[in-house]
Amino acid sequence: MPMISHILKSIATVILLLVLLIVFFAVYRYLSFGQTDNADRVASKEEYLSRIKNMPLPVDAPNILFILYDDMGYGDLGAGKAATSSIQTPNLDALAEAGVVLSDFYSPAAVCTPARAGYLTGRLAPRAGLPNVVFPSGSPEEFMLSKVMNPDINVRLPEEEITLAELVLAAGYRTAMVGKWHLGDVSPSLPNDRGFQEFFGSRYSNDMEPFALYRDEEIEIPAPADQRRLTEWYTREAVAFVEADEQPFFLYFAHNFPHDPLYASVERSGNSSAGLYGDVLEEIDDGIGKIVASLRSTGKLKNTLIIITSDNGPWFQGSAGGRRGRKGNTFEGGMRVPFIAHWPAAIPPGRAERTMTMGVDLLPTVLDILQLPAPADRALDGCSLLPALVEGGASAHEYLYFIDGQQLFAVRDQRFKYRGPEGVFYSTDQMKIGFAMPQKEWLFDLDLDPQESYDVSARYPEVLARLREAFELKREAMLANARGWDEKGNCRPPAI
Image (tube, rainbow, N blue to C red):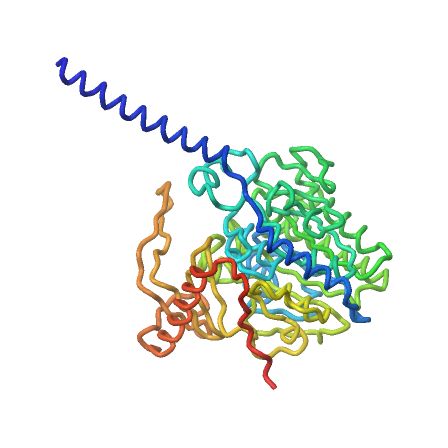
């Protein structure tokens, strides 16, 4: 017995020492980590923005209103919305009818932070240096995910990245942001650091604490902010900004809804046939109506480019429009999102286009509209949407790439989508934790099977080989130069 007791004590001592070592290592990494920016790239960025300041804007440069919803599904709005939908959005529907809907539009990522980085920089999230969701500084989630599990990962948008707001501010626009930021909560990565002259909103998702609302860098509405009034407050701020006299303007309106938890005003609650989710979307639609009315009354609507989309597919509620998957995965339901563009001065009304496009196309589109050069020291993953918006036609992309975190999972051309040999998440309702079941490579014919239900690789071996090659080349390029420095984009020239 004394021998067994001695052995057990020795084992316990070793276990305790291992635990202490792990804790010490975690604390050391937490205290020693500090994200740094690339000074040479920051200098190159500043030189580029200085050049932009000296370039004249077109005389008809439009106002730009970019509206980004959080977790709005493809089937909740636009091309994916069923005619029998129980959610009534007459103001959004009117913009679609008087503008253009892109049915094959994708968010840059399947979750919020990397998607927002892609929209604002024109670069896929690994290029933009922010491939994962970030959490409030000092929170348990930040400690575990960013300091312990992946201690070298960035926790804010790197300063060397050029945002759309920085670009148009340099070009002479008045800029503001209303809503959810979620690209870091410390300088130099706050909205006012990154090209927005005015900011009102939250720094994170509405399920993260403390949920306060900021006016620039000061808290205006302390936590916990009453989210039943969120749409009211955001709409008020957006209307006040667009009604100001100075033009041209750029407003980034990034709503926290319909991300979970859901809240609607007392007046709106219980009105929709789609429950609380429908209440939220219908109240959002009311806000859109007020913003459009303000643009119309001030004579600005005709020359205002309004773009409406989502950061990823639906989460716990919402419709993916019959597509496979939801938020968080690279199937169609996770990344294909609604897209509406309205610009009476330039976009012919009442059109739906199948041109395959992605959120990284937004910044190159603005460059095209303003006739400005792209930065020469970095690859932009996006291509201009302007031809698709104005007249339709073939995509400037030969391929679109679907990335989660830093890993490439799929690639598509205009018809087919290739998914590499990776695990596919599986779970049942009684399982507390799911897992990825290994699968071979798959090929989907999106024309005939937009639900990604059937692998047709045996029928189209040539297509399989071509998309597999594109997939492997992209993966190798990402490994060789993850940030895309000193690379050129791969947009195809428009057909003549």
